[in-house]
Image 1 (cartoon, rainbow, N blue to C red):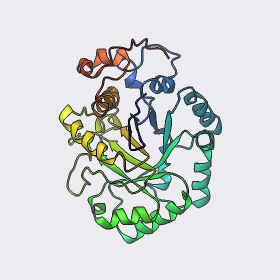
Image 2: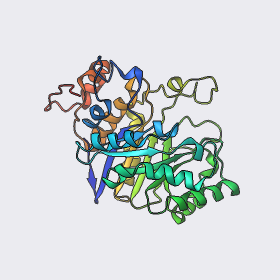
Image 3: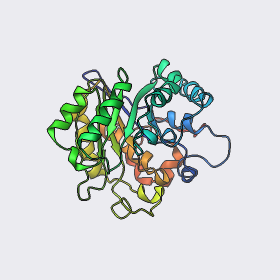
Length: 298
């Protein structure tokens, strides 16, 4: 677990998702029966729920998540909102309320970090999309909600004002900056939550329609690239009560590698890591807390 305090700010770092077949070996010890969510919770203090983008989870599964993360003090879950409301942009107030209410067990336990609305690059800054965001924001009123936009038309001062006026936290992203894509930033528009998502910089596959998810997010940040995000994160700490940094370059566990590195860089100290990952990425030795013996327990 990684927590850094600065002017009453708490830093949460974790990956986007935790269930990927290619993580067995480099991340998870081979073999059946391991609780992957609890495994991740041993090392990070948050995780972004990715599967909720594709389908609304059952009440039983949500209760299970709430129970399993309850074993880890301060661990939080952020929720990626169903693509119906972002990529398809079908405004359905009752449907959105039903989706939000599904996560009541996590929210009631005080373990909900935020809801994330991730819009695609095609979602541009125009009147119809501003009106859509206003309607959606009203449904989330009173809850921490983050909006990710990827098109450069949003990188204007009016965007920050619009987000503040509608209670939306701006998601600062790292992505391949191609054409009109939005560049990295350190914007804060809500006092309770700040958000950063690192997608990788795979320029070759980012906009390829036939590239699979793994190919698109196959990227490992180098220390110099992470140092720039360390500076942005530090500038945001103190302006928000909770800052979430999510690594989404998930292929082969690279999200965890960069998450551990960034945690260590911000803390200025070594961090606990699974020995399986250190064996797969020996460069992590430089960021390892050697005072803690890892047993790779589930």
